[in-house]
Length: 54
Image 1: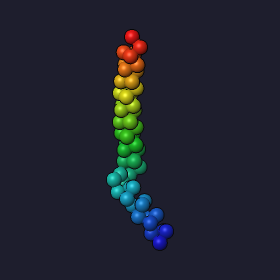
Image 2: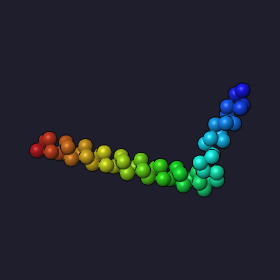
Image 3: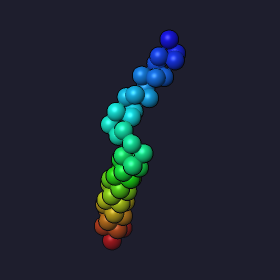
Image 4: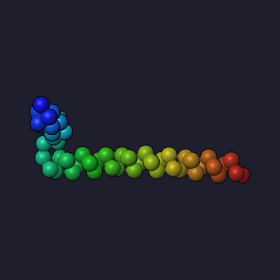
């Protein structure tokens, strides 16, 4: 049963990106999106603090 679940999990993970290049591209895209969102949140917080302390 455990082997079946592990196999099913591996198939589910690799079904979206079947090659190593696909895995690398997907993880790169995810990193860029996360970094972009984090920068926006950081800048918004920084501006809010600056406005509050003026």
